[in-house]
Amino acid sequence: MIQVKALSKFYGKKAVVEDVTVTIQPGKITSFIGPNGAGKSTLLSMVSRLLDGDTGEVLVDQSDVRKIKSNDFAKRVSILKQSNYMNVRLTIRELVSFGRFPYSRGRLTAEDERIVDQSLDYMHLSVMQDRFLDELSGGQRQRAFIAMVIAQDTEYILLDEPLNNLDMKHSVQIMKILRRLVNELGKTVVIVLHDINFASVYSDWIVAMKDGRVVKDGPTAEIIQSEALKEIYDMDIPIQEVENCRICVYFNS
Amino acid sequence: MKKRYLLLALIVLSIISLFVGVSQLSPMDLVDFQSEETQIFLISRVPRLVAILLAGAGMSIAGLIMQQLSQNKFVSPTTAGTLDATRLGILVAMLMFANASMLEKMAIAFVFALAGTFLFMQILDRIKFKDAIFIPLVGLMFGNILSSVTTFFAYRADVIQNMSAWLQGDFSMIMKGRYELLYISIPILIIAYFYANRFTVAGMGEDFSKNLGLAYRRVVNLGLILVALVTTTVVLTVGMIPFLGLIVPNIISIFKGDHLQKTLPHTALLGANFLLVCDILGRVIIFPYEISISLMVGVIGSGIFLYLLFRRKVYA
Image (cartoon, rainbow over all chains, first blue to last red; front, side, top):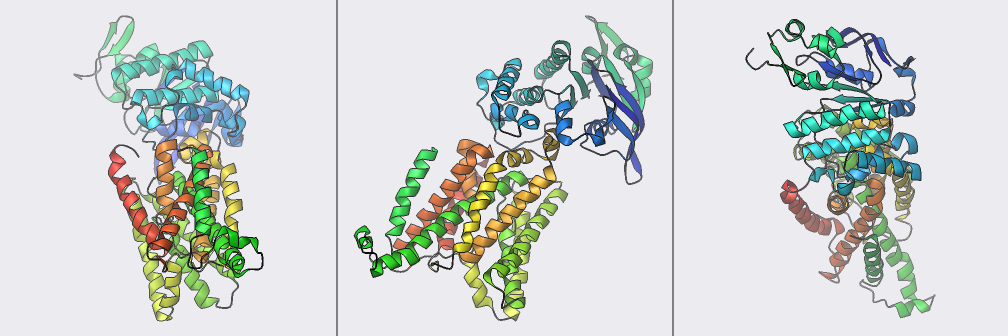
C-alpha cells in the first residue's frame, strides 16, 4: 500500500502540489486525472522519489520512501516517465536486461536471463528482441519499456502518461497489458492519464486533481459522474453507457 | 565490425608503424642488440607506437563516455571545451608555476580540464532546447571563449610560440622518457570498462537511472573525471588531437549500438587503429618530412564528421 500524507511541493512561492493525502490500493489500477498543470505528474514523481516533497511524507508499505535505500526502492517501485526522445541505441533485449540492474548491477545471472526471457515473452517481443529501439514504432518502444519494468519485478508500477503519442490501437493495447499485469501478476499500477475515457474503462480507482489539490478520490463509478466531472474540469459532460463502458461525451461541452 | 578483425588490423598496422621512418630499419637489424638501429627502435619507434595506441584508445573512450553522459552524439572533448580548458590550464601552469614538475603541471591542467567539462555539463543542464546540433555549437563557442582567454594571456606573456606546441598534436617528439604519462590511460580504460553498465544507464537520463536505483550524479561525476584525466595526459604528451573522440564512438555506435560493455573494446581498438593509419599516412605522404597528427586527423576526421552529419536523418 502506498500512502501519501499531507504532501506539498512548491516552486518558488507557487504550490504545484498542495496538502495531498491519498491512499493507493494494492492490486488495482489507479488513474490520476485532471486538467493540465493540476500537479498529477509532480505527485507521481514524488511518490517515485524522482522529486523530493517539501512537506509531508510518502509511505510505501509503512516505510518512509526517503529512508529506503535506492537499490531496495528500485526493487519495490518502478516508474516510467513520458518516454520522450531517447537517443541511446540499445536493442530491446539490452533494455529489458537493464530491468535487472537493481538485482545484478549489470552482471546477469542465469536467473536474470530467465526473467528477461519471460518478460519479453509476456510482451510478445521475443521475435524482435535484437532490434534497436530507435528503429521501432512508438507502440513497440512503449511495450519494450513496459517489458523492462516487468523484468524489474516491482510490486508497484507507476507510469506517467504512457499513452502519449500513441494511436488508438496501441493505446488500447497498452491499457490491456496494464490490466493483465494487475489481474494476472497481482501488480499495483498507478497511471497519469489524459484521456478520461481510458481512465473510465480501465481503472478501478480514480484520483482527480485540480490546482495542486485532490478534488475527488474514489472508485471509478463514483468519479465518472456528470456532477463530479463538472467540479474537476468545469465542463458539463454527459455520460453514456455503451457496451458496459461509461463514456464521457465531452466533445460538445 | 568484428573485434577479431580490429585486433588483426591493429597488429599489422603496429608492425608497419615500427618500420616506417627516416632511418632505415629492418627486422634483421634488431638481431644485434647493441646496434644503432636497435637503439632507435627502442628509444623512438616503440614509444611512438605505444603513445599512439594509448592516445587513440584513450581519446575515443573519453569521447564515448562524454557522448553517453550528455546524451548527445556530437559532444566530445573537442566540441565541449575540454581541450581548450586543458590548454588554458597548461598556460596557467607555465606562467605561474614555471618550475613545477611534469606531474604538477599535469595536476593543474587536470583541474582546469575537469572544471571546464563540469561547466559545460552545467550549461547543458540549463539549456531547455536540447537540439542535437545546438548543443555542440554551444560547446564550440564555450571552447572558443576559453581559447581566446588563453591566447590573450599567452600573447601578453610572449609564450604564443610555446603554446602552439601544445596546440598541434605531434608524435614526432615522442621519445623514451617523454610519453610515460600516457600510461595513466590504462587504469582509466579498466575503470571505464567496470563502470560501462552504469554509464549506459546514466546515458538514458536522470529519471531512468533513479528508477533503477543508480546514483546518477556520482556516476556522471566519475565519468567526467575520467574524461578530464585522459584529455589532460594526451594534450600534455602529444598535443591536441581533434575529432578523434567524436567520430570513432559514432562509427561504432552505428554498427554496434550503445551498450557500453559491448562497445567499449571496439571503440578503443578502432580509435587506436584510426590514429595509427593517420600517423603512418602523415609520415609517408611528404617523406622524409612529416605532417603533424592533428592536421591528418583534422582533415580525415572532419570529412567523416560531415558525412555523419549528413546521414543524421537516417540515424542519431
